[in-house]
Amino acid sequence: MLNNIGIPGLILIIVLALIIFGPKKLPELGRAVGQTLGEFKKSARALSSEVVDELDEDKKEDKKEDKKEV
Image: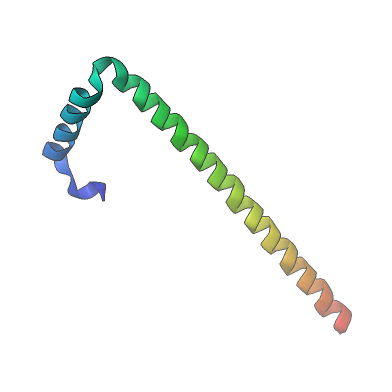
């Protein structure tokens, strides 16, 4: 998605952001977006690790049941 923007498009986005938010608000906005993305990534990692752990437990239980049947 970002590969199609190019340098002129990026400059246009920066100029529009400066016009809309102003130079004083832009760093605060960037910081807030960065913190939000960081928390989202942290939550996504935690969720995916929980799912992987549950899948591992299910596999272990299946192996135990297979051993009991034999």
